[in-house]
Image (cartoon, rainbow, N blue to C red):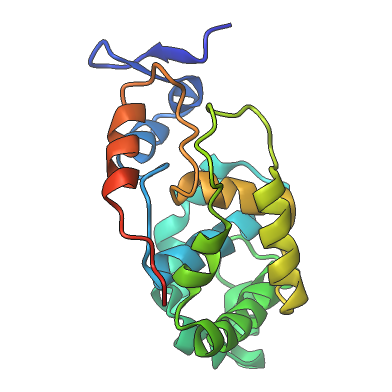
Length: 201
């Protein structure tokens, strides 16, 4: 089976982009483009955690609700959440109401705050795990780098950051370019990655 399908403009796209109507714009404008913004990186780690056991379509459809519920994924604001916030979120029908995952976001915000104090930024930390060599697009769900980043985050006390979750995060945030070689977006992502200034702090 081909790794691509024909997009609405007649150009090839990664096959998964045709699985749901909302996937095409996400595939064409977000997935794989490099991100150096701490808030967006933190948001994606949280949403990947929420996706565990669910489909990305479910999470993507609720993304704006998640942003409203979690103060636009502001690390400092979430780090101050307490018991009343957990109860409020458990009543919010617009998000995934899973106590463990909600509490994980709050815990991870506190760990992210510590990490920023140590490293200068969350971005500087995660981009250290970018693979040294550009590999051909993968069909795997983990990599040596995602296993290493997962271990590093867990060592700092993060939760819901297993190697598969972390690899999906790395794909989405542009640490790897896993667009199919003949996908129309592959070259755009490659250009963006070449132009991207890797954060050092």
